[in-house]
Length: 108
Image 1 (cartoon, rainbow, N blue to C red):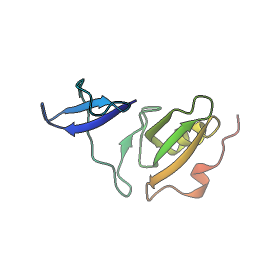
Image 2: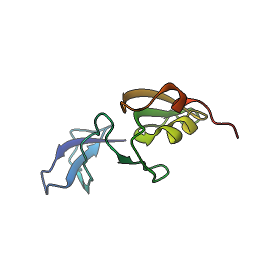
Image 3: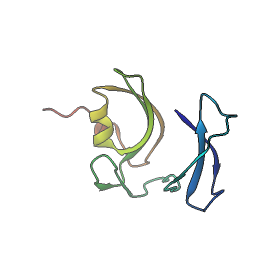
Image 4: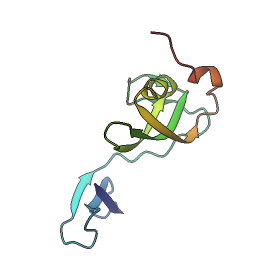
């Protein structure tokens, strides 16, 4: 697991990271990061799960039940609902256009 210690220190599009187990260690890694502001209200996004362009988005931390791995993902309501089959989710923000029927389980 890595911990971000600085943004834009080397270049505007980079993040400087260190191992979370040893944050005071000498090893630092610099990676290029695409930093976009969080969408607001009914702003249109491209879902990185299915690549659909949509205004129905959900920002949530998803925990894989099998491995315990946690990831914060911004997904469309359909990808979010599909992920509930194998992940536990903690919702942080929801598009103002998402309604309860968008979160219903789809039939196979």
